[in-house]
Image (cartoon, rainbow, N blue to C red; front, side, top):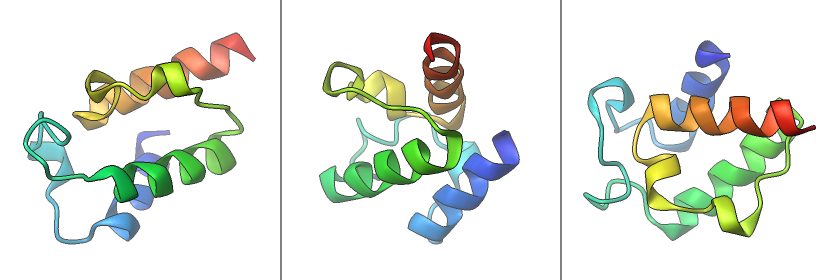
Length: 77
């Protein structure tokens, strides 16, 4: 799952060292357009539905946070 997420992130923003980042949203590395694209890709690739209430900075600040969100969404389906 982590490999698939990393592939999505690398395609979205090849200029970012995602494993080293822990404040992707807080530091402005990812903007709102990136998040919209990312949520669509995550929904499609992991067969989940990320809701508006889950669009919180803490869910997208790091690879680990995104993996936790994906796992949470998959367990709810």
